[in-house]
Length: 116
Length: 248
Image (tube, rainbow over all chains, first blue to last red):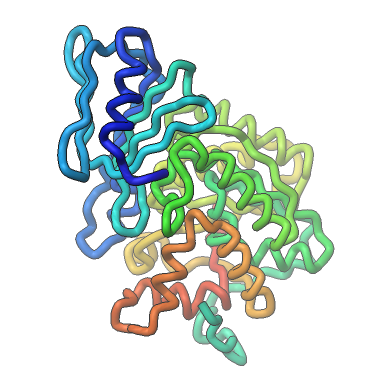
């Protein structure tokens, strides 16, 4: 992945608006936080291959970045995004990584279903 | 990371545990949910079986496609991680000397599948391979929900076998003092001093998952390394410990 270029990401968001697209949205602390010194319970959530149609999708911030997608009855939101990639399947991958390179948040859009 | 010099004997680490005698066995199947679990939990035991000429298979439950470690610096994405981890696992299995079978479940979802379905997938392999020894995670004492649930499925699978059942060994994970307070000391151990380097190489083959850990362990400032990491470095390439699970 590359560091986010907001103009490019905005262009990729615009390309995917106003038609059904598949969504992968995730945030994760990792499964082993309870073993750390602070014994924090892990907090993880994801939705994979939810289908949404957004009329307006925008990237904001000075980095890390936020993305909001305005959908029919509500919103999709992610904060902490640092990197992006459009892969060979033309999937838009947005992710946040911590200093060790671990994934912290992901927001991904694809015209075709993400691999199950 | 350099391995510490192996101790002349293991009596301090072995305590009252009984040694596993590989020669008494006809084969080993290791059933764990993620690519890299096999190297962390049983990389030494797998190598011992390979060296004794006994058939060994790793049955890997999931693709490991939900991991948050993406390499350090990160080179994987949520979408590429699955194929990357499968390739890393193939390399690790070649180093350890075991066959590989993927069950093909998705990371983090094992506990939400029908337990009998998952147990059936495992049982089919155990019936076909007829190993004398099976290794899984200790249900309820393995930290990660995938570990606990595949551990339970493996216990169900062995319990449901007719005829002579294999011995089921279980690996507990996490706070050693915590689980030992409940379960006591593990029952058996494998002396892996002579295959420790191979276990290390297999762990390093899981680049996306272990790069950061090995970078951390390699730093000169020993005060930055936690006690848990020091124990990992001191013990994990000398000995592997297992509980014997009751499957009746």
